Amino acid sequence: MKYFITSICCIFSVVIMAQTEPSITIKVDTTHIKIGEQLTYSIQVPKGKQVTFTKLELEGLEVAEDLPADTVNNKILKKYLITGFDSGSFYIKKQQVFLDAKAYFTDSLLINVATVAVDTTKLAPYYKTKGQETESYTFGEVWYRYQNYVYILLGIALFIVALYFLFRKKEEKEEVVIPKIPPYIAATKELKQLEEKELWQNNQIKEYYSELTDIVRKYIGDELFVQALETTTEELMDLLKGENKQQKLGLDKDILEKLEGLLSQADFVKFAKQKPLERDIKGHKYDAEAVIETIHKIVTSKKTVKENEVQ
Image 1 (cartoon, rainbow, N blue to C red):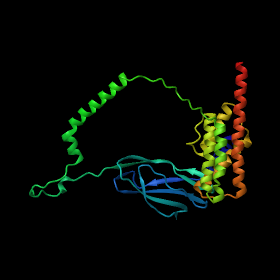
Image 2 (image 1 turned 180 degrees about the vertical axis):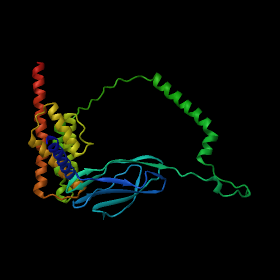
Image 3 (image 1 turned 90 degrees about the vertical axis):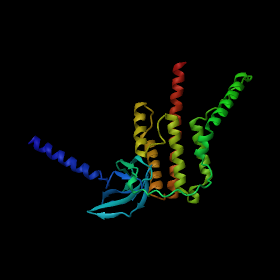
């Protein structure tokens, strides 16, 4: 009886997990193409959800055609035709998809692009030699003919430079040390400059949120010595929560929720083209200031405690 109840619970939990996590799959018709050839890259998501496909980000490859999304077998299918003009192995990295305004990521995929082999049997036949014509020299021909003289001149120039540094009087120069601006002062100054630009007031909401979150991320990275710029919202929050627990920073739940809300809203604005209300924009500005002020007070307090212990 216990075994039967345990089995039923396990099956029920698996079903619940399967329902909570939507299935996002990718597919290509081939992972090996030649230069100039195309492959079909597909992203498949469940039907019944509000889907937003972001712009495909590629390195070393190019999107030849962005096909409209279609519904197939109760799934939403988005296809892209991808090509490459350089040989090598290139990753189609994780792509971001929004389902019901929540961000998810696809798997990455390796694509190999090979050069096109030349069939020498199909080359054009030789023709009789025409009369001699006068043509200008190419750079390669000039270099081949005069490269020895170039090397000699370079050797002489290097010898003269060596003599100059060997016999010249060494002047004592004082090193100019440019003091580094503390992260808190830099962040406060950048927030003020951002407000003076009046970006969101001029309908540049995407640019405003991008600069606002960059200021907050840079401050967190410089102040807490964590990788904050090159991470997703979810990765940064997991990292910050871990540091908060490990280093006992003392960041409370409320300030972490404000930071996560700010970063998530910025993602929606940048990738889903959301336009928040004026009161929400002002609220996120205050949240950014609150996050910076809270972390600054915590770090300052810890430094004061350490200095007192040393004394």
